[in-house]
Image 1 (cartoon, rainbow, N blue to C red):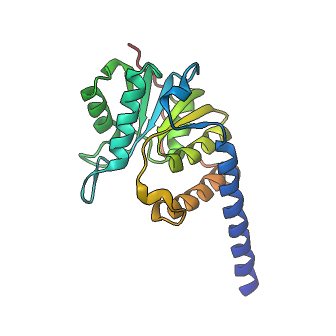
Image 2: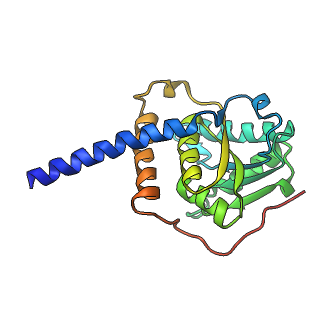
Image 3: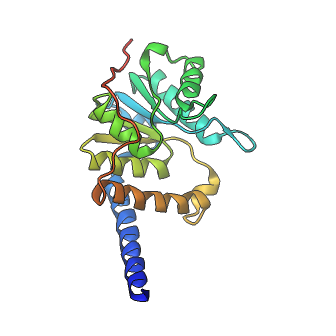
Length: 213
């Protein structure tokens, strides 16, 4: 029994290290911090990854920075349509609808916005963007730590994607911050989902069309 546990531990460590290295390598030259870096690209459809609007102490800064980034990119003409993919699995809680309303308040027209209510995980968001909304080329909008995993997932699914890194929290600069440690484990799960157990999203359903202005 002890030998089995040691073998399983060693296997997990190998997968953990490999997954995180692969995620970092895959993100190289695909992750951008400045809107001007997107000039001339053909990634005019964006997938905005959802998160909760409210945190323990008020407005969630991750949410605010993502919405601000998407609005800025639209207003600068870098993107023409936005798929908001987030969690809508609880009563009176809808990440896509919250983000849509705040984007409209910032001047983004409703006709440029499409909602994916079943983006419960980043894996689901990438999978559904391709299979349900028929997107095979797009710009991902989130924080850098999240974008790197999303790019890895997109690549594993045959999606041509780049990412725009919106503002992050200073607390996340340390590689050993809570959010980064959690992300290392999430990357490991992403690797397992894509290459070991071939996971599918929680919900799929029928094909849906993107909105156009």
